[in-house]
Amino acid sequence: MPHDGHDHDDDAGAALSPVALRVKALESLLVEKGYVDPAALDVLIETYETLIGPRNGARVVARAWTDPDFADWLRRDATAAITSIGYAGRQGEHMVALFNTPETHNMVVCTLCSCYPWPVLGLPPVWYKSMPYRSRAVMEPRAVLAEFGVTLPEGTAVRVWDSTAEVRYLVIPQRPGGTEGWSAEQLAGLVTRDSMIGTGLASSPA
Amino acid sequence: MKLSDLDSLPKDESGPVFAEPWEAQAFAMAVKLNDAGVFTWSEWAETLGAEIRAEPDRAYYDSWLAALERLVEAKGLISTSERLGRIQDWDAAARATPHGKPIELSRSLPARGTAR
Image (tube, rainbow over all chains, first blue to last red; front, side):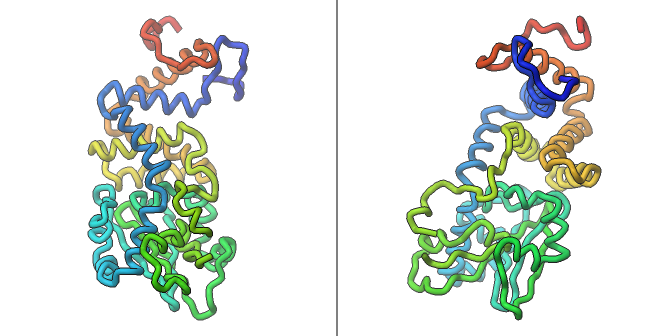
């Protein structure tokens, strides 16, 4: 490992960062021992980086806005309802849908270690994993919301939910006005990732 | 937001979700080991949470990697000496690899713990 804290080019090659070396060491040993398949790792990374994103969650929300039976199912058993449209959670993971109303705005945080509903929202944004968000969301949710540009009406209560390894929350934002007659596909385009964490609202029609 | 924007791939307004490739690799290894039943997701969350609490100022994926190292050793998949030896091997391989060539662990490298 380099001892001087930065890499020189005067060797034949270049030094990898200490952290990259640790990852390569782990990966090569786990592959050799047959615990992980390198091709499967690549597929997983690509899937989370490009394919999942928050669009799965947006489809769930749009379906809930347009299909009252599905919305009911989501309220009763979000894990089953979400699985029914093909977004299976990791094993043991229980999904709960939190419906925003004019009276209550829901917001999700994980104070332990950033548990996040990956199958519907992709990978968590950088700020979700940051210590300031994780501590302040609980202590002063309105101030955090204001920093995200969200100001709620006086009468709306903010409820903060702490994710765990077992329970993941998906916020169902309120359907924006002026979208009567829109298809679920059109509506999904208004559902931002932040609106499903509760640090944003669904976009208004342009 | 314009309707024409909707079909593009999801982007993360706050920047890349992985700052560097190693973060994605570390992420994927933990998920796959969980899939393989090496540890439960609760065990993972507990270990990661403990790493974060131990060094709250450390970057998130640094804690993630530390938790992964700790858990694979605790589960007996890899020993500490094996892991540290392999880090040295990769370091030597990287330094000996000309720019622009893939870094590979050479089978002709001296065995760990000897000829160093």
